[in-house]
Length: 102
Ligand code: SF4
Ligand code: SF4
Image (tube, rainbow, N blue to C red):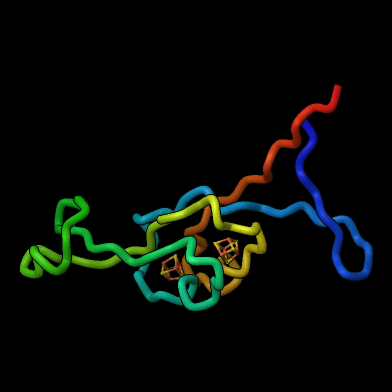
């Protein structure tokens, strides 16, 4: 399978790796990946002690911890900056399959 590729400024081939998900079992909720991403792809969410997503404004007593979540994968440019700042290796990526030209 071939994938969508680009070029660096110097003309070297580059294959973007787009964010597919974040492993909540490893995430510390530190927010480093959120700060480094300029594309609005991720946001923190709250979980209860059973690992279920809760509304932190309405269910403040139930919040056990916060984790990073993918809220708009379509905005990702595949730079993997979020991976480089994550201390727990939480992010999962994939290249974008190129459409076959006939
Ligand atoms: S790969 Fe880049 S654009 Fe995509 S979520 Fe991570 S930092 Fe944002
Ligand atoms: S940098 Fe890693 S550990 Fe920190 S919030 Fe992002 S995914 Fe979670």
